[in-house]
Image (cartoon, rainbow, N blue to C red):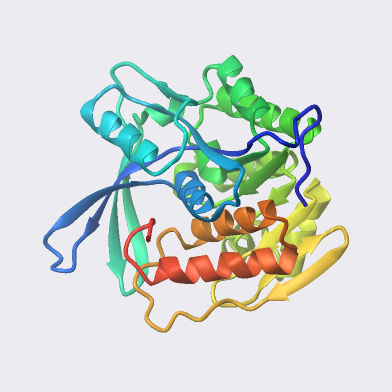
Length: 309
């Protein structure tokens, strides 16, 4: 599934670069009165889980923009301390990271966001910086949230850069991660997701969300839609139900891993993606990579917050 980009040195370090927004996360402690500050964000979560299980010879980078305030400095230290390269993170003067709160009902989560002025909204402003990051990456990873936070012109430039990266032989991985509240309307969201998916070689849709927006009858229909848009591999996640993996020569359905005591579903899909990509990078097949994703997602659901050690 993974090919080396044209002109790359097969003996050199390989790299996954995730593009998106890492935010300040506040979640309630067990006494419901104490809030714990952490850092997380969908594409960063995937990079974090990829880093934990990536095979030898793989590096992990994050691409975003941050501010120049104390929380931004804390965020940069956190990323570095977790072994993720920060060379592609661009500082923005007089800006700050976004922030969100997690509220739980049982194990299901609800979010409140403060991100309108987030520095990460400007991550694609510098087109040369964007092109350099993609040119040094073997896997380029992004999400529908990455698309949603960008101004329209920057989004178009970002998708064009993704398409170029794929033409150069890089693996472009995309989780649509549908969040209607981030978009002006569902039509704009559906169009942007479809355009971005056409630049991706691997797509990780979540079936219930896709069904609501695109009207897919079943996971197979969802996979077929993304395959027709141009994806080489489609991994249709479906909660506790089997995950469907489809490629040009294979179709598999892999049962989810049961979680006896679910605690918090935050980051489950992100962790699945990170573990899947790490297994793929190690040479695993489709079913084995999905199984790795399921196991990591189950572990994540058993802890609090998006990043569970």
